[in-house]
Amino acid sequence: MIIACADSRADPATIFSAAPGELFVVRNVANLVPPYETDGKYHGVSAALEFGVGVLKVKHIVILGHAHCGGIRAYAEDTAPISPGDFIGRWMSLMAPAAEKVGARGSMSRTEYLERMEQASILNTLDNLMTFPRLSKLVERGAVTLHGAYFGVAKGELSVLDRATGEFRPVGK
Ligand SMILES: [Zn+2]
Image: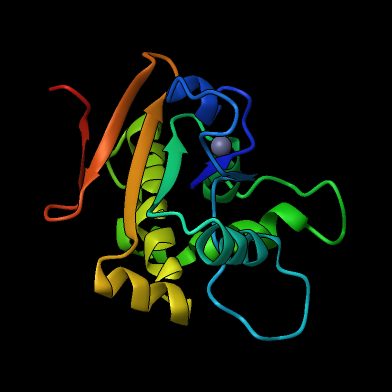
């Protein structure tokens, strides 16, 4: 199961050379997963997780982030919303814990800062996955493995998260 951004350049089937039927994909703005909530509202990602884990019995869940993510940039640069509801702003506030870990931009270049935010958000989303009670049990039992991946859209380079160090390493290097 892959949770990816809606960005057309971050297409999981293309990145993983997957044929129809191979990947169960959820895409949304900035590949986020809200924490487990039981507020009786509408939870598209939670429903997809329930289906992937409960029905399809996926063994691996990949959070696939990418470079030059418009959602992350909107959050980092506080872009003006298109509606009073500010759907993007509210949605992107899910990455507040990640932004807090990255801290102030300081002397980082804009590109470096946004890349840090994009990658920290993947780690935060992996934490959010563990708030789903049944999923966290399956992960602890080793029945499901969680992964982080990051696609550099300009170079076409895929990096994979090393959970031990928290760093992303290019595949095959
Ligand atoms: Zn994106």
